[in-house]
Length: 448
Image (cartoon, rainbow, N blue to C red; front, side, top):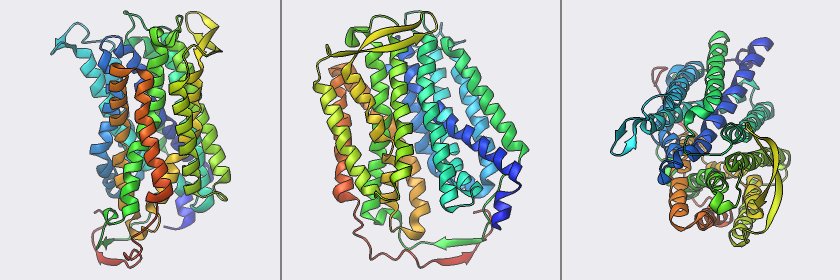
């Protein structure tokens, strides 16, 4: 397919780009909805706060490789369409959890909680498919190269912006979690999400979406990404990284929402949402900064630096006394704007957003370095390892429930220590003797 065919008409191309930006934002919106909604369920079941988040990321384990095969077999447009339909279904189930099932129970747990978890799991399938689509699609629409990468960075900024807004909006709508607070308290947010998914589905269906040219050939592999030590260690790094990225603000929301722990007595959930929003805003700042300096500063250097700084910030937050506080503005739908005292340690944790913002790109680039024809296979494995964002925060939440919120952050320190090791030692390619450029091909049908 020629380059001008990939880009299509100027008007159609920009409509498609806007649609991809919307989808990039929805990836973050759906992902970051789980933790603040968890404050509602945690009010009913102490252990339940991160289970919705776990279900969302569990879907990646099952859908990572199938999503890549969907992209190969049915193309970008149809994969995106299916992803949006699935996302709509998942959001409908989450909405239903606030409307039905509260009066029924299975094994002592209300039926509506099971409905919510099913919705979170379905949304996870959608987000996984969208992740497979939007990055390469934006690169194609930009024509590849630097312009394609620029569009991907812009899409990532939309992703971070949605991550900033989501916990802020949930906190504003809830204000303070009480015994009467239910998922229906955030119905407005779910309606908006469903409307955006429906709009994006309409746009994608209406415009021409470019597809990569099919060669009709299949590559034969004599090895796999698992034969490269630096790739295997990078896969573990991605698993831990997503756990770090989600766990830091997720447990922070629970900590600040718990008045007995944080000392915030009014609109604690609104305050927690606002503080968590700052974390995602700093991730946006960090990504923009990294895109500006990455031409001069290597991924390895960036990863080593941010892992070291993040460890220092979290250790300081763990040991800093809770009575050292700072005044912060907060907003709730009921009381409007007000000032409240927030533990300083919360702001140290928020600053970690600057560090986590550049880790994914750094780990991915280091892990696929020198892979050649095995890069595509490695990308599918990485998508599966996003599952770490469900497992590690769930473990951290269990530690928080049994040993205290701040104690749980030692798990994050341990994961960051691994990333520091990976940057210093584990990222070195010691398998350079494996041939990665000699490609044997055989004729196969277009759809494989």
